[in-house]
Length: 277
Image 1 (cartoon, rainbow, N blue to C red):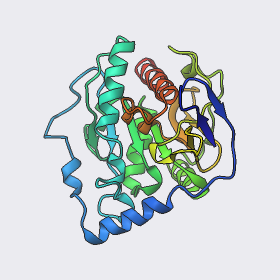
Image 2 (cartoon, rainbow, N blue to C red):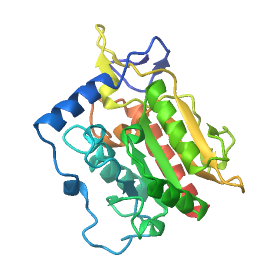
Image 3 (cartoon, rainbow, N blue to C red):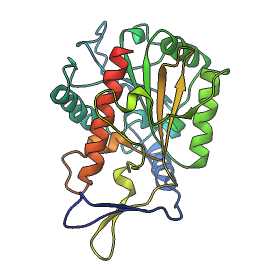
Image 4 (cartoon, rainbow, N blue to C red):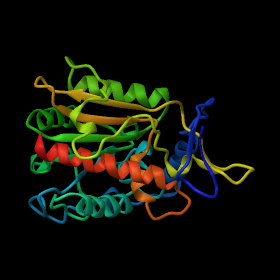
């Protein structure tokens, strides 16, 4: 359990206790939305016929799982969770804290989109609720080997971890997913970071009887990575964390400020790394 004092969110006390399932409510809501109607997948396709990126760095948010129960989120597809607020906040943050010319929204693309290779930074959310064809996997493998970078965020619990690991094996059958080493260049390329802090989703927060804000997640965090033959980190994955929520709720007084601050710093490091490696 993560706990923040009610008077200040700057003094963090972090302890771990027995986790509660994090996916039951989401699956229940997904079923209800599937039964009683949900927005069309195309509602969230913001490609608008554009041929490519609109800035030096234009985030590509990966569309996955169209038409499945698992693809339905809080009134939107699971891949679109936290959009557009997450992109609005983090892109403005990157513009303030770096010299990267970044567009203020993401482009929503299928992995088989012919313009995929024009986007240096892919963002996957809720990957364990995605459906990835063999064509998707082959396109992603080629994208990563040709210099692209992917961030995978917001998957929780052992079943979702196992799903991600199976997907990673499909992408690179001969490469292992490993913990990102603390001395990896991505951890210090702009900000000096550590992996000791767990970043919760807004849905993991609750108020204790004493008035503190606490978070209950499905176990400890892992910062996982896939590397190419040259040692370049091509895919970073956040297990039992939700960095997208930390970006989305950057202006929400309910969400702890230290988590947003850390998530911004990781986002800046990831994007600088992708643009320079």
